[in-house]
Amino acid sequence: MKKIAVFPGSFDPITRGHENIIKRALPLFDQIIIAIGENQDKKSFFPLEKRIGFLNHVFKNEPGIVIAKYSGLTVEFCKKVDAGYILRGLRTSADFEFERSIGQVNKKLLPNIETVFFLTTPEFTAITSSVVRDIIRHGGDPSQFVPDGLIFS
Image 1 (cartoon, rainbow, N blue to C red):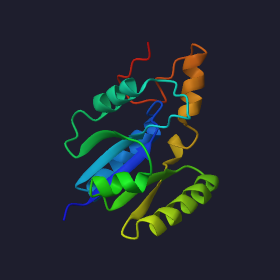
Image 2 (cartoon, rainbow, N blue to C red):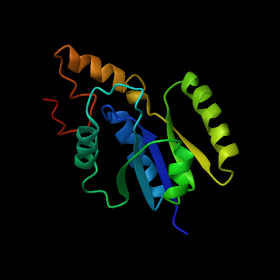
Image 3 (cartoon, rainbow, N blue to C red):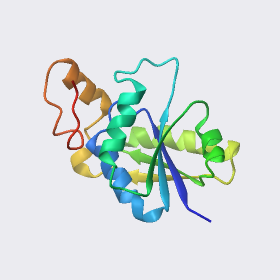
Image 4 (cartoon, one colour):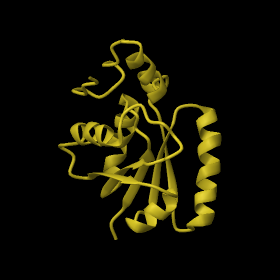
C-alpha cells in the first residue's frame, strides 16, 4: 500500500518554511499531496490558480509531489485520495496546541488517519504567509522568505 500524505493549507503564498517541511518529509512517503483548501469565507491575497502555479513551479522536479485543491473537511479529502497521513508543520508551542486539537478531531472522524508533525527548522520559525503578504502589500522584497523563482507581479 502506498504511503500517501496530505499537506493541507492555503499557501497564500508558499514560504521557505513550507518548502523545507515538504522536502524533509518526502523520504518518508511515496507521495505528498499539497492540498490547497478552498474556503469561501476567507479572502485570499493570491488567486487560487496563482497559488497552484507557485507550487507547481517550486516542485516541478519532484515526482513524489502532487498539487491539488479541495473544499470541505480535510479528512474527507484524505479518504478520497487514499491518504493515510496528514502532514503539518509546527513553528511554536501555540501551533502545537492548535494542531493537536485538530489532529485529535481528525482521528475521531477518520480513525485510520495519522497526523505527522514536523518541527520547523530554526531559520524558518519566524516566517509566515501573513508576514510575506504584508511585505508584498507594502512594496518590500519577500525573496528571502519564499522559494526561489517566485514572481509576485
